[in-house]
Image (cartoon, rainbow, N blue to C red; front, side):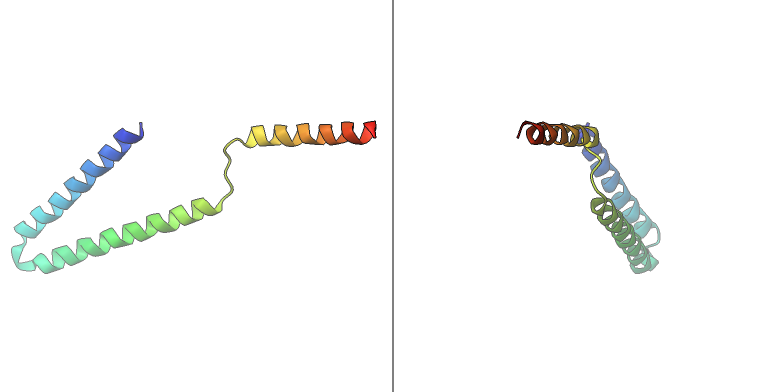
Length: 86
């Protein structure tokens, strides 16, 4: 599944880059403006994604949440049993 997602992202990136070059060729006299505008868009999009990743990484993981709560319950039962037997 991840390999398909990575492949799709790569092909989309190549397609976007080729589209930018086609636009630069179509508007050859304004090629600096075309490349500058798309560079700013790509950098802005990248910064938004980095901020989103930082926000997501700061949140606690929900993976195995049910298992961890069960483990905490089991540990509490073991502590009670240990205290009862002493």
